[in-house]
Image 1 (cartoon, rainbow, N blue to C red):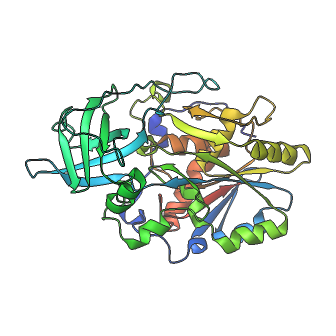
Image 2 (spheres, helix red, strand yellow; image 1 turned 180 degrees about the horizontal axis):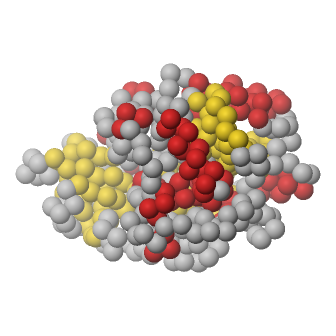
Image 3 (cartoon, rainbow, N blue to C red; image 1 turned 135 degrees about the vertical axis):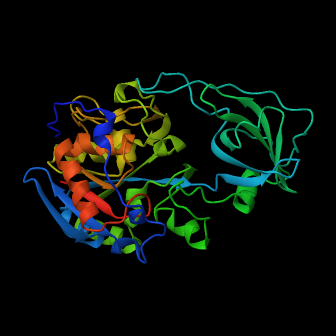
Amino acid sequence: MNPASDSYPTSAFDYELPPGRIAQHPAARRDESRLLVLDRARGSIEHRRFSDLLGLVPAGDALMLNETRVFPARLVGRKPTGAPAEVLLLRPLPAAVPDRETAGHGAGTSGEVAASPRLPVPPSGGGVDWVALVRPGGKLKPGRVVDISDELQVEILDSTAEGARVVRLHTPLSVDVALERYGRVPLPPYVEREPGPEDAERYQTVYAAERGSVAAPTAGLHFTPALLAALEAKGVLLVRLVLHIGVGTFRPVEAEDPAQHRMHGEQYTVPAAAAAALNETRARGGARWAVGTTVARTLETVADERGFVRPGRGWTDLFIRPPYTFRAVDRLLTNFHLPRSTLIMLVAAFGGYQSVMRAYRAAVEEGYRFYSYGDAMVIL
């Protein structure tokens, strides 16, 4: 469990990273990425390969995987003037962000917007409303239209209090077909290139199942089907849940006091079978391994003070930072995260601030690759 007792300002989570260490492409093989092993009890750091995880996870432990699937959420088109424009779809309406009602961690409100008479909705295709980010934000006001193709237009319907837009997709195709045909992989902003054919596969875990994320659960990108099969054959329990990742995962904490930061809400699903498996694992003395900060946030949202996991579906805006006592997670597998981000704060809460920042410095010195397509760290 996390022994941290001190809180830290946002500036404490800064670190120096040479720009060349930000991975622009995935490793040649998923499980050939490097793995920094931080042992909290001994305070030791080891440098391994991700495939070594097979020897680190004992039989009887549970490995928790986020099955969310990234969808081609980035739409690139033009305004009627011919000027370029982009739309990044975040989540569909009306099932957007509900009132704060689920497990004390809901986020935001939403409402439906009436259809526009200018762009009729074809009965066989689009007309689906979404919350989205747009660029250029100052030009794309309600009433404007972005032409993506002859088969897909995006109408700006409304603005939100957070600066996003409510948009409507107009297409004679099904929305899924339209997005697959004209959408692009929403690579994070620090990957400074256009997405290529490799990204459609590699910016996705091999176990991705339920579409809904605009960012990958990057700790899971290192797994191969063979490694997962070997872990299962060893007696490691693979437990699957879902948390759909929003764009807020890339936003730094601007306030010097992290308590002033408004956490983005994300939708989760913890199936009854997953909750039962995790509770049984804890009861027999096994450890729960969270594959990524998304899994950690989900489990900490639905667990009670004893670490008993309750199944359910809802929204979480839980912001984990030092000091925090983890209830549901015993081990954490994660990538290396942006400075001043909510993600590095969660990792520091789990591993201990001093130990985690020391591990980050060691990773920089040892030439690790950082961020979504970079290397991994496991905290024991």
